[in-house]
Length: 237
Image (cartoon, rainbow, N blue to C red; front, top):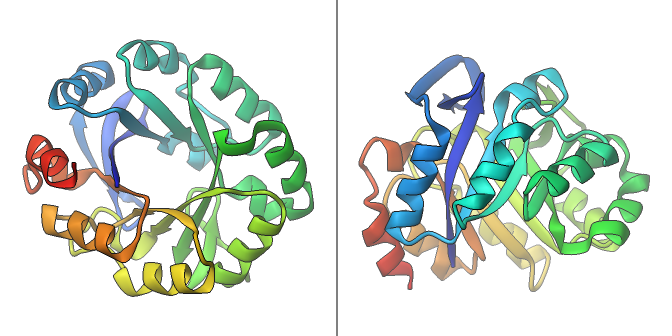
């Protein structure tokens, strides 16, 4: 299982939200590149970057950081505010290895086939779940979509890899929603699924691996010392 350390960005700073609430923002660093280098030194291969400012305003605000982040040697998956095909293309051109599409797919499900036909596995379908429904627009809105059914429709349109975030658990460290992920994996055999939200310990990561997850995102737990990154990577190797 791949561990994705997260860098969430707002106005150039490394921050974290709690349960998707922009009013509960904690700043951890003012140098995203220095933080990324610590992940390289620990042995990470991937970096999960969320442009929270972009997600809030509806267009990416940190594409200028992507070339330097890619130069660290990390493969970068980037999302937040990528609500047009042009924005996806710009992020990939700027240095992202993968891009995360969420609101774009919710609002134009019929156009999803064109997205996946063009970029294939370089586009991750980001399915954010809040109060049992699919959330969008930086978690500020909810669609009347049941997550498993939505995933099924995206699979039919060519999606191959999914990031599923439990918004209520995001930034809490109370543990991932294992029952949610087990249910999704049971509904869709062979689903390539990465979990985000609630990861607070190495034991949480191992539980996700046992459940059959392809990857897991960790943020606050890394910044506040609940997870030792080198130890976590060793445990997952």
